[in-house]
Length: 408
Image: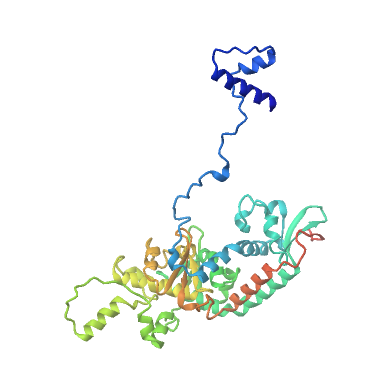
């Protein structure tokens, strides 16, 4: 440091008096002084904390659906809760299908999509967030494994009992989905992919054989298994919206709005005005009618699609669904690519949360002012119980246990 200071001082002195010729007797110093490289020790790089941060370019991935002034904190927190428990939900499903409900730790680290933890992170970090439900242990072969705790196994058994008790209700739910579909048939894979949305058991594809009066499974040429409706039940073909209309006509009329352009001075009679108002508000088209017969961009077709989505959400466990759930049934329910904009136009009934790319739609009337479901399905009650255990931390984190497994 002292050597560099001396070099810098001599350079400055030479600049002030160019005629001066200081005697440099040290050859090593002469070599350094005549070097073309800078000998300055002053850092010219701006520290990171002073750099101006670049603003993220707006995109559908990070742009909120709702403006800040219209945000509903209760619904937004539910979306955040789902993201927080993604590892719990996916890992529970994945491990439940494994032999003895266990998985080698080195294999689990590669299954970030299946287990629901962030890519590039260690799976152990996610396991330690829920010590009462997941554990890491060493097998007698000295390899590390992950699996369920005894408490989690008990909870899974409780969930199986809930699903068995609700089987008839789930059968009725699937019948209604089939009755809403365009051709009264839905691929079994689509029902399976959205099973958690409706509380349908994982082995539903095997259970449908017990109900030949309701369902028929057809294997198509490409090997795809399709569930078809056998019997149409007019008692089931009544939407929740139609039932609400019978109970409170005025409230339901105010739930939707479909703008119709017309002149102000129509001089309509009272009866004609009432018909026009009905055209402008309540979706009278039943979701159990054939939506494929409507012209795509007519008001009648839009009312049909709004009615279908209202009934679809009403059939879900928590009266809400993500865009991915809705798109799954795009062909069956004759939906268009403008579904997002269509639902934004109905803020009295639907609330869209999240971002424009990953939005979730809520059926507002199903929730109270505190964001709590008014009617809770037994599966929802169980899920809330599971979430409470998932948040408890009174077990030693990171404990490694010895456990014996039966070799398969």
